[in-house]
Image (cartoon, rainbow, N blue to C red; front, side):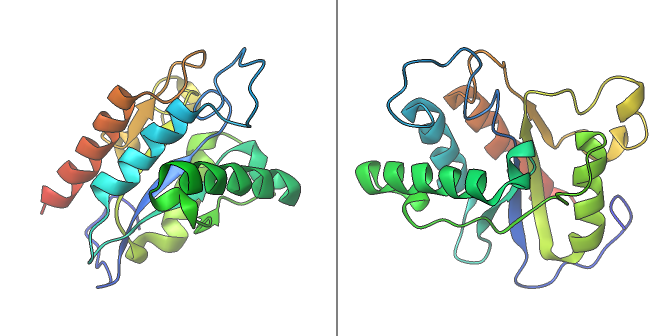
Length: 179
């Protein structure tokens, strides 16, 4: 179980739990010709490139409410691929590794925790990119200790920045250094 001593498989992955609104799609983003601003996709690309290695790939688990509709998931991937083809990098051919349970609509923290419990042995390190609060408040008290050191909270109006990306990479690296 998450938080207790665990055995990680040799083909373990880094996981990015990805929200969309307020992370890749800043609030009040109007007039965009593409779904997401290139600057947020550049930051996401940076996380994937800096945290992946030949022995440990970085994968995306969609935790956004966009996970519920297949059409929305395809729209996201289409824009990832557009960016990757134009700019190079891993988004050119990326697919979602998985998504949190589309039937579960409680607290985002609980949705991610549930996925982690089911997939714990596959995960070497993980980070949640979200504009929602995942650490503070009564609703997040239950798993706060598990999430501490795993969350990058974005500014909803700015979305994912290169500074956020650097923080995410640092959190992933720090987890791998822990015994």
